[in-house]
Amino acid sequence: MSTPTPRRGTKGERTRARILDSAMELFSRQGFHAVSLRDIAAHAEMTHAGLLHHFPGKDELLIQVLTRREELAAQQVLASDSDLEPRELLIRHLDQIAHNMETPGLVGLFVKISGEASDPGHPAHDYFVARYRRLRRLTARLLETLFKQADPPLAHDPDAVAQQLLALVDGLQTQWLLDPDQVDMRASVVTYLTQLGLDLDD
Image (cartoon, rainbow, N blue to C red):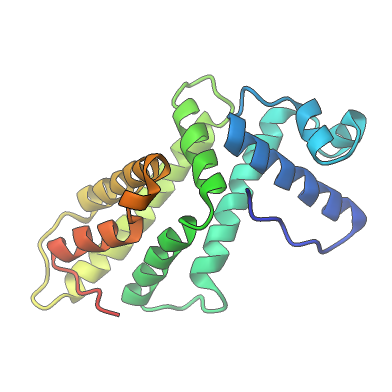
């Protein structure tokens, strides 16, 4: 079950939010290609024509769903504090991984759609290419600062570690979906970072 979008704003904004919630839930359960706009409209308890008024195509709707997921994650990481120390920012990201373990529907959506999007013809292909480039860049920048701040400084390549860390998180998501009782995503990432020499004691 997806996390409902808060019901605020105008009637049109609330309707769009309801559509996004329905699309997020159906995509997470069935995958992008198996769900039609009519399915989403029925789940949102509205007409097909009404849905088309807000989202003229399924491709655009998918991108909005993925964007919404990232916005929610960013809000939970930053909260009201946009000027965090690098170590605290990393811990917030680790806490977000733990939070993801409470939302299997959204994790399943990401895993399914990101796998499908490896096809260059998939509507979310460019979205994921840009997303991973951005995440590698931002993660490498954060790691570079943390490696320099360590005592003694750590000689790891931040670009290589960023790529490894993102691969680890994605792989853990799949393992966790398959066997949730045996996989603790946050603990596994903490173990990896600790092995690199980063001090993450809360």
